[in-house]
Length: 316
Length: 213
Image 1 (tube, helix red, strand yellow):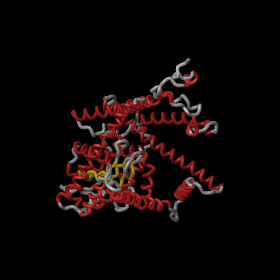
Image 2 (cartoon, helix red, strand yellow):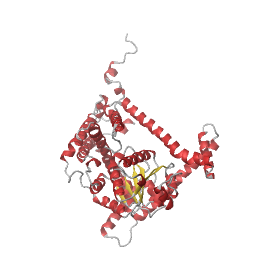
Image 3 (cartoon, one colour):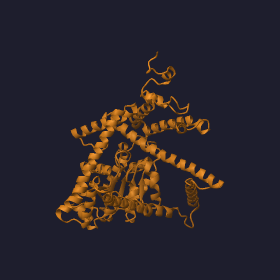
Image 4 (cartoon, rainbow over the protein chains, first blue to last red):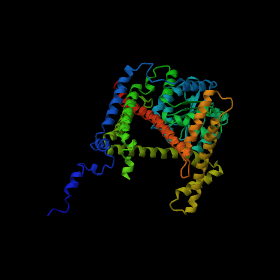
């Protein structure tokens, strides 16, 4: 007599060898045993290949990139608008840097932000940093420290710190941007001009995926419509922010790698290669993404033709 | 590479730490979830600790404790402090009492967000979408196309009501336009994420290992 714990012969044969694979693969036949099989073996080769190719691109890129094709088709229009907004600043202008970038997306805009800050300092502006997001505050503190280490005089930098309350905090800043007990030439100048955001000649919005330029435009722009605002944001925020450029609520917007490349190239006096991502590595990444897209499309073709139901339908 | 790390020992430690954590996160790509989870917990713990520190140092002490301690507090600050205390005791107080600060918080947040969206986004965008008289032909064509696309996409959200064949067809076209828009946005997102990956690889290879520097 067979022991009770012994499984029937047919079910044992149907079970996968590894424990993780115990879950039934409910996908249509053309999907089965492909990417999931690789993941089961712990070898997602696509990812390794992508990392290796991008790494090779980062290493090889600088030696083969030329000035003309380093980043495809840099768009000077956005950079010109930003340059124009900066050019209209009065001598000794006060610029508020609303630093609300986040740690996950700041690397994309770091080079552009640093270039813009240097550009403003070169034009004689003084910079005041404020943040309404926690991560933005961390980045602002680091950026201020970096500027001080680079020898920017302390009297041209002002730390307005973190303002709690998100939208409500922004509205509070309109009337009073100074923290209690602040002293020095810049706080005195801000206080003399009213103490709120109206004291500043321009607002530079550095945004991310949390609170960004859109919220600043909605909360501060509606209360101070004459105050020019320029935004720097990651590429994915461009579709959201471009309409504000058309309405004139933003004076300038740098939100794609094309914009960033044009601005950094046109503004930086020295070597700008470290400020922009390697175009060669980006191209490799795009090609890999294209291959993955085409592969998925090829896999989905039978379903699109009506040959088999969608995976989610099979699961149900 | 980032300009954030100073020269000397502190910079070296910061660079090695950043490289180590980057590799911990990348380990997920090899199917190693425990190490990745450790990195996640590290991030969550650090973020929470930083948030508490920020709240105490930059909000509670300068904006609440010091004004109340110096006797120069705005009377509304006492009311706000009372509401904060009610929130702190939310577990033990009756619901009707706790509802007051929660209602104030929700209402204020909604009012700011909604008011800002209407005054700062909806109205200006509606104004920009209007077709002014004597518009140049290319701009007129662009504006009409925008209007048609907007109408078709809005029609795609019509659910539950009886519709004629024309409306059904228009809604179908709107759905495809919507999908096209989402696809375009995903393209933007892909470029964004790729540049982050390139940045991290650049940091590991150039900034940390010094290859190709």
